[in-house]
Image 1 (cartoon, rainbow, N blue to C red):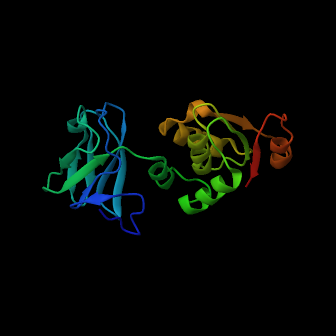
Image 2: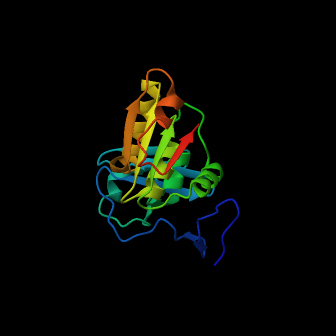
Image 3: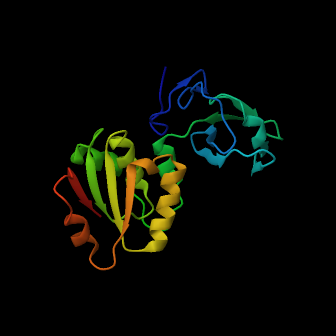
Length: 198
């Protein structure tokens, strides 16, 4: 078994991606990461009657319904894609971005510095597109909470959509701030484990 440096976290056996494979069946409305190769992955929402078009042909997304994650699907031009369950890392890289986004290597460092784990409660000042918020919510679940503060309602709306799509909204509380974002986030009850101001 080997892993490539660029595809860190994805393991291959005989050229077949094994990561993101689970026995749960893909359902209508589920997100799927269509994997062609290390450089070409596409996050799509599965809907009956909907097609996804690429330079390698189109894929009938409805054909994925009922298939297990990890199933292979063939495009109209005969190109094979793997339908993987997206991980938080994939969702971060594919977020709808309206702000500067943090990337996995930076997020990993931040999570290590904050020492977050299940049950942690953390305050974040500056939600942005929600990439770090997603990673923190994933780290603190199922018993923890992320309290995130944003000054721009448009940014918060984008972040809320990204976090909802990732299935992590139950672990995040959104707050709007009118004046001083950092002061509002820091001035929280003592039952918070960490405060991160970006």
